[in-house]
Length: 95
Image (cartoon, rainbow, N blue to C red; front, side, top):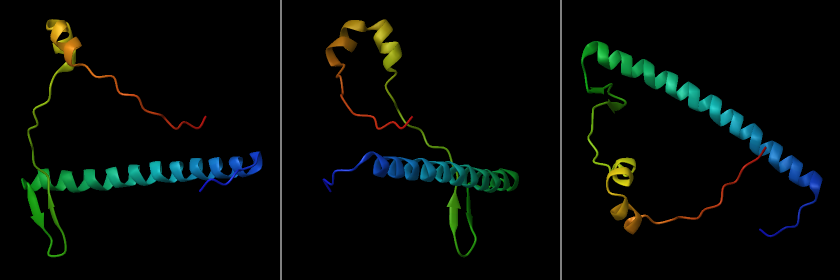
């Protein structure tokens, strides 16, 4: 897909992206609201899992072990410096 675009085409594409991002944000908010309603119901009835006959939903705690890099950097800066790995990436930003 290496089609050269003129400025007007770029503007149309970028506007399309912004419009879709706005829709996505709205949908994410709706999803979060609905999830919160289900979670509130589950908390109210004291259930970590519910089977509706159509859907099965669970909401329960999990534990993850993560490295506290800020604490390591402060308390063991030599070790931190030995193992820190810079990562380069590109960000796509429309402003």
